[in-house]
Amino acid sequence: MNNSPSPTASARRTVMFFGMGLFLLSGCIFTPPAIEYSSYLSARSTRDAADHYLVDDDGAVTYALAGLRVRVDYMTDEALNQMFPDDSNRGPFSTNPYTYGDWLDPLLGHTPNRFTVFQVTVTNDIYAKVLLDPITALLHTDQGEVLHSFGIPSYSPHKSFERYYRGVRGQSGNEFYRFDTRMGNVRSSTFLEDTKVFKGESYSGLLTFSPLDEEVDRVQLILEDFVLKFDASDQPLETVDIFFDFDRTILKTVVTPAADPAE
Image (tube, rainbow, N blue to C red):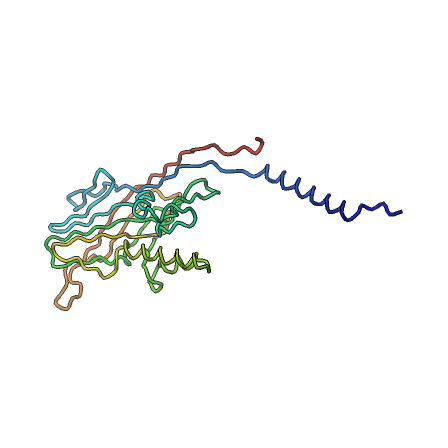
């Protein structure tokens, strides 16, 4: 007489043990707490008006010469989301090119910074024309890193929005649509190359760098070879390097406690 279990009984037992395993495993999964996270850079007033630097109460800093002002504002993710409200509210499918929108990282419990972004505004009152090359901008950290700014096209010499977003783009039609939307937003907001600011004009755009490590407490933004004057053949005649120092503050507030597996 064959005392071995029937195939049906074996299948039921396998399903039962598999289900118990999943139940036990699910009880051991740790859900991190939801966290309100913000990383903020405020201008450090080590340079004063005698050095042509003016620090505002809102944390922005301005380099001022007679007839010229270069203002730098650090852009929080909240401010960047407000720039593109309709592109920042679709979770993982948000098309704000500078942030993750309202997506929450399930492992961190908060939304991390996608980039480090500054808004630069050049106001020219008396010079014939001035020029900032955004590709030469550098961000030095107190951890010894030197970060290069992002250009738009794939052939940019250092970092490139086009290369970055092609790297995360899927193959579906929706993915191509989101890629095009992000790139359109970049072109409409970034500080464009070869943009001369003529007398009586003001121009503003975003400079973008890779996100900062958690350990970074201070950074220095350097606008290299800012052109003040051109010669008769339109070649730079007088340039200046402009330095902006920032202190970093990170705030983390637990909104909901972590889930207890025992419960």
